[in-house]
Structure formats: structure tokens, C-alpha cells
Length: 459
Image 1 (cartoon, helix red, strand yellow):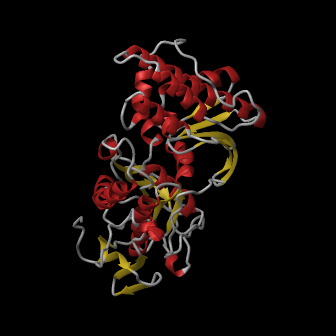
Image 2 (image 1 turned 90 degrees about the vertical axis):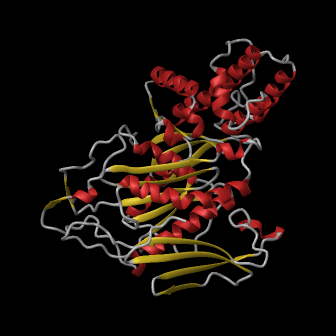
């Protein structure tokens, strides 16, 4: 537990109380207590991934934080959303411009002073949003500033924890999120140069993902927002991947197409505006990232397999193997990768022990087949919609071969492809913080009765 105690502190308790009834809340002189019914049986396993078995005892998480208010211009007014009041965004609220105080001129990640000496009109208030990502096996916390950009981005990967099991173990993932989330929050606040509580909103991933892991971040984030008296919003994990490109200087104009390729999803969408999405096609079986991981396991590459498979494929020879491109000869924009995985499994059975070059050749042919399938459908979507701007995001979008081929396709068709940088393609808190900024600036605020969704269609 991080020591963030001090004058004016607010305590936030999140308690799992065995066989309690409902979700009573109490605010007692600065204490926030939440009681959650946990039965720890097979028919009520929705929290067993987030909390250890109570076995007659009370399990609890305790978080200590300051409440320091909101640092805005001396003439501005911030109204608390807890009492159904709103930000004065877009309304003239001061007579001129003020130079931001030194405490808000934070140091950027490359060491430069961000915003030093700049003036900002307070009719568009500066907004800092804390983002929390715990959907699977990475704990991410970041802070996004609407005027200065990304102030902090802390990430802990559980890859080494799950490597011995060949994949993610949900119970271990949930417990590790509990251990890591508070120290990561402290590190993010230190990186941003902010006191605890000096944010204007909290965003957390509410789905899709592992239910126990999601509940850790959702409970932590909603409790923080209550303790700090700021809005909270639930973020769709895939929507955050989609909007991560807006963390870059080069952003696409609306409308654009989006290819979301990750361990759990492969989707093509038409994006008309933030929050206005149409699903054009998706995988009917394995996602592209899932196919990468399963093929890596067939080749004995261990976990995490996707990056290792991509690296091995770079040493493979073209034309040594030929694998199918499922569903590319049919109309429509849906994907399928299970048949490709079966073809690879049959080829692997024929490999001789110790033939590393043959393994590399199989990996090369597999990556070619996946990339071809994705490119064929992207080109078809561009033709059908008339939109030539494409965003590629999600963990698989960091694949070198995919990026090279997408760039070639764009050059041939006169289109353009946009990507988040590789560190924002995998799960991270920065994309959650930015998506939270979009939602909170539009007036969204999550009620206290938060929820998490292991399955949650983006449409």
C-alpha cells in the first residue's frame, strides 16, 4: 500500500464483504466505504478473480489519497459533477489569459518543459484525466492533459508471470493487478509532477476483458473518482484502441476506416465521429492475435508468442510453404483464421526435429497469409465505402510485415494509413486516459454503481 497520507487526506475503502446484501454506500467524515456481496462459489464466480477467497473473513483493499481540488485560473469556476453541476466549458469565464503556474508546466517524457511560458484562455478549461487499464495481463495508468498532452504513462506487464503456464491465468492476473495498481498510480503522479487528486476525471476500462481483472480497475477507478470528487467514465477497451491514434501528431480526419487487430478481436469499422461507429466485418472464429499465439505455441515459441513468431518469420524464406487465405474469395468483410491455424498444425507435424530454417519458413508463410487476409478486406472496405483513410490499431498492428504491406497498399490506391506508435498498440493506460477525456469533456459521468463487461460489442 502506497503511503500518500497527509493533511486534508480522504480515505477510500473498497471492501468485499462476505454475503452482505446489495451495495450500501456511506460517506462518514471523509471516509468512503463500499460493501460488495461476494459468495465465492461456482455460481457466483464473478468476483473470485478479483478477490481471494474470504473463507469466513472480510477481504478488503484500502487506498489513501489527498483531495487537493482543481488547479485552474483564478477567475475560473469549477463546479462539482457530484451535485449535478457542470464545467463552464465554452462559456467566457475570465477577462483574459493567464500564464499557467509553474506547478502545471510539467516536464514531458523527452525531458522538455511542456507548456512553459504558454498562455491559455480559460473558456476551454485545462483538463487532466487519469486512465486505468486492467482488462487482461497488463496494468496501465496514465495521465492525459488536454493542453499539454500525455503527462505520464506507467505500465506493468505480467508476461513473465504467465509464461510458465503458456497463457494468461485469470486468477493470477487479477491478483497481480491488485498488487500493482496503487504503486503505479503513485509513479504516474510523480512522473506528471502532480499531487494526488490533482486531476479532473478518472477513466477506467470496463470491458471487454477478463471479468476479475476488469473489476479491479473499475472498482479502483470509481472509488478514486468519488474520493477526489471528480467525474468517472467507463471506457470500452476496443474504442480506446481505436482512438489511440489521436495521441499522435498526425491524426486522420473523419470519416475513416479502422482495422482493430488484437489478441481477442479482429474488426473492420467505419468511423464517422467519436462514438459513431459501424461494424463492417469481424472474425467469425479466432482473432488474428489469437491465431498468432496458437501458431507460436505449435512452433514451441512459448508465451507471449505473437512477437516471437513475427521475429522468427523475418528469417523465413518466401514460397517454401503456402497456406490458405480463408474467406478472401467470398463477398463481405468478415475474417476467419481457424482454417489457417489447422493448415499450419498439419505442416508443423511434418517438420523434422531441430530444423530451425523450416520452422522459420512456416512462420513466414503464416504471417504472409494473415497479412494478405487483412489487406484484401481493407482494400475491399475502401472500395465499398469510398473512404481512403485507414487507422490500424491493436497489438497485431505493431507487426512490421503488416505495416509495410499496408503502406504499399495505401501508396497504390492513393489512400493513407495511420498508426499509434507501437507502445500505444498494446494495452496501455494512455489510450484509456485520452478516451476518458473525450467522454468527460462531452459531459459523461458514470454512476456509483459501476459494472464490468467481459463481452461488450463496440457498436
